[in-house]
Amino acid sequence: IALGHRIGKWAAAISIIIKSTAGLHGTGLYSAGGALDGGLLRLFLELGIPITLFLFYRLIRIDFIVFLVFILINLFFDGYLSSVTMPLFFEYLIFKNRQNKYV
Image 1 (tube, rainbow, N blue to C red):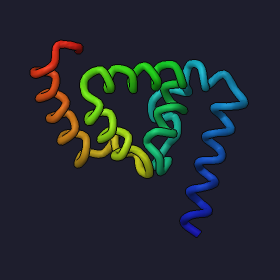
Image 2 (image 1 turned 90 degrees about the vertical axis):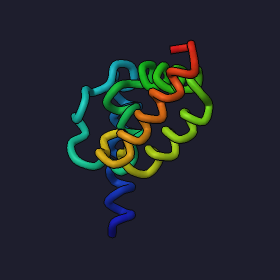
Image 3 (image 1 turned 180 degrees about the vertical axis):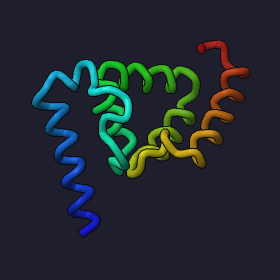
Image 4 (image 1 turned 30 degrees about the vertical axis):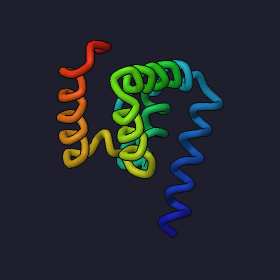
């Protein structure tokens, strides 16, 4: 039942992204309500495709490992909203930023 519920949420979000202009400009932060069970999907829905791709580009420029960690954290749950995972991610991001001149 949980998998069916998750698939239903994903299908609704993908439908909104594809069938409306939300793919271009997003629907706004926290418009997806509670857990969407996919941080990447939530980013595409709430921020839009161009801004999400720009975010990915900036993360890759900082460090490819940073990008991979972000993708893995946000694959199947809304990790970027988590008060447990994101402080650790931001700490690593700040550390890499001090070593890197791209940001």
